[in-house]
Length: 126
Image 1 (cartoon, rainbow, N blue to C red):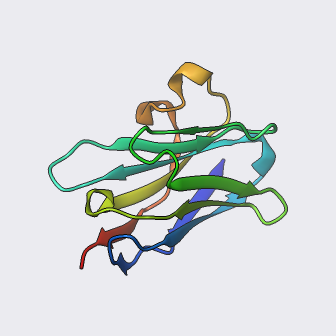
Image 2: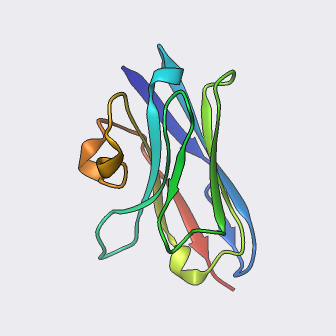
């Protein structure tokens, strides 16, 4: 099992940057694939980015590609999401998720992940 705690959510202006962090506790951090998802009011939860276990291959939603970067620190048991050039459409509640065994075709599917944090609010507004 793994427990996830997100932090770093805040109010930021359009064009600004923000870094979200997900602290994971539990065993065998390296064996987990992690994902970031977000959910805006009245909308479904949507995939943002993922980073695979061991090799660390990344995947991004088209809407954030080139602006967001996901990375993991296996020594500190953390996964971060660096968000640059933010847009008002990035406003949402952001969740960190983890799963030990995922096939590539399900990396973007929220229901494929077992473990979830409580989330953190990100608001992009002037």
